[in-house]
Amino acid sequence: MVSLSLLLMTACSGSNRDDVVTTPFPTPATSAAETAAVLPTPSSAAEARVAPSATPETVVVQRVQRATSEPGILTARATPVNVAEKLPLLTAHMEQVRAAMAQPIPVLPLTEGLDTQQIMAQQLALGDPRFVAETRDPQSGVPLRNEIFGIYPIRPSDITEETALCATTACYRVELYNYAYNLSTIAVVNLIEKRVLTVSRLLETQPDIPPHLTAVAQEIAANAPEVLQALGVAPAQTDATMANIKTALNASRCERSHHLCVAPTFLQNGRALWAIVDLTEGTLVGVRWTDLGTVTGTATAPTEKELQDEVVTREFCEKSNELLRDGWRLDYILTSSDGLRISDVTFQGKAVLESAKLVDWHVSYSREEGFGYSDAIGCPTFSQAAVVAFNGPQVETILRAEKAVGFALSQAYKSEFWPAPCNYYYSQRYEFYLDGHFRVAFANHGRGCGNNGTYRPVVRIVPANAQHFAQWDGATWQPWLVEQWIGPL
Image (cartoon, rainbow, N blue to C red; front, side, top):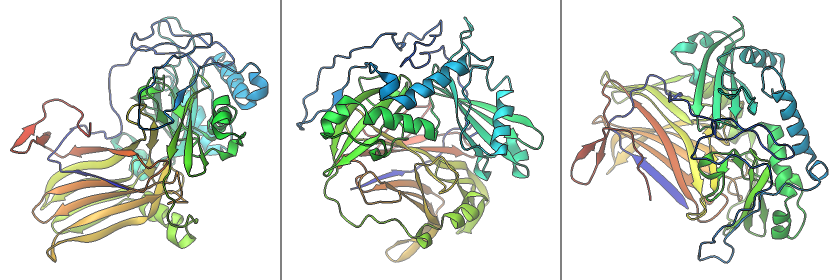
């Protein structure tokens, strides 16, 4: 299966920042997870969401009739009786959470696998009042559940005007997740000057989870009775693939990602069993089978020559490249999680785009239940991408009737064992034409974790100068006056 998305753009958003959205700050939605412990709830919960109850909750769902004999199951949210025995990783993690929430700064820091620079970056971030401003309920002062998810060296693609110092000195990106607000707070820390350069907040956004939470999700899934019943055998925790990839599920608290949910997936006899885990509450949300279809091709690990991870990282992730062709001029760079980004695009000397990039892939395997993955693409090493760049960007001529009409800049991203089940292959393509128009295209190749997937790329395009966006209605261009969504129904 090949899913292709084409966008013909005139212009859009006029923001100078292409990584931060500034919006009014909301009231807390829910407090910390309540598996194995009842943690405080903020005093001003948003009416649109429901805070976790202190007792196990049973969800009654009216099943929708479908053309499948296995419609999936939403589980009762009951914590295991012997949680310490059955889920030792979850138990230990929640003990660490409770201990952290009792500290003056109620944040659980990262502790495993850090070098001295990462440790320093984390300490500097936690010492900045801006970074920890939302770690307590504003009315009651009750600590909220907050955890550091990642500490990464800043790449050239991450540098903005406010962090220009990072172009010549060592800087790190520290990512904090607030479970109550479903909020990501990002600090850019300069280690030479020992200070935080910027703090940004991304509402309704979740960073990639750290390895220890991936292990917790695998433990919850592998020990769930619903998974055991579906598989017929007790799986090993390591049998679960895609355990760190974020997901959502309709009719559950994962819906629209208001809770932090991931989808450990078990492969068995040509099918994939999705075990959707809510890490906000530490419970299994539901299970669902998908058909993988006929396996074609040989699933072998790519060779060192094919991947060229170090070369791709050095040449396309750690520095920006310039492309001059057919009257067009642009810079391009591979980002840590937003694919191939182009910037400062001009045609015949006139500014066209400030930047364009692929923010995410939203992959859905069920219209009714709405479950699937949220995939990021990007650099092959030291990145947050779920599917990484395969070789470097390629430039090719666009031909029509054997005549050159423009050129394309493209990049492929592959999971290590594609085309095996639950491995992904995406491609990204920017087309530039001799007459001055351009096209942005993205494609998925293959079936992923099911043969009925719907793939939706999320693209962000920032125009230069003119701040107008128009949609073709079949007869004329209709300007957009306000931001809105458009896509397949």
